[in-house]
Picture 1 (tube, one colour):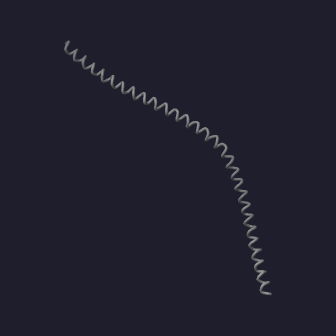
Picture 2: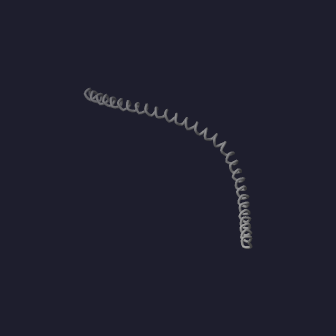
Picture 3: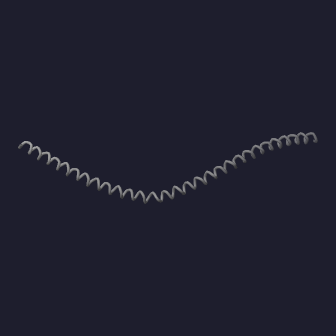
Length: 107
C-alpha cells in the first residue's frame, strides 16, 4: 500500500507541474492573442484607405486603357495617312520627272 500511495503522490506532483506549465502557456497565448488583435486593428485602419486607393487606381487604369485604345486608333489613321502621303509623293516625283523632261525639250 505504501508504494501505491507514494506513486500516486508522484503522479499528483507531475500533474500539478504539468497543470502549472499549461497555465503559463495559456497566459502566454492570451498575451499573444491580445497582440494579434492589436495588430489586426492596425491592419484594419490601413486597409480602409488602401481600399480607396485601389478603387482610384482601378479607375485610372480604366481611363488609361480607354486612352490606349484611342491612341491605337489614331496610330492606325496615321499609318493610313503615311501610306497615302507616300503614294502622293511617288506621283509628285513622277510628275516632276515629266516636267523636267518637258522643260529640257523646250530649251
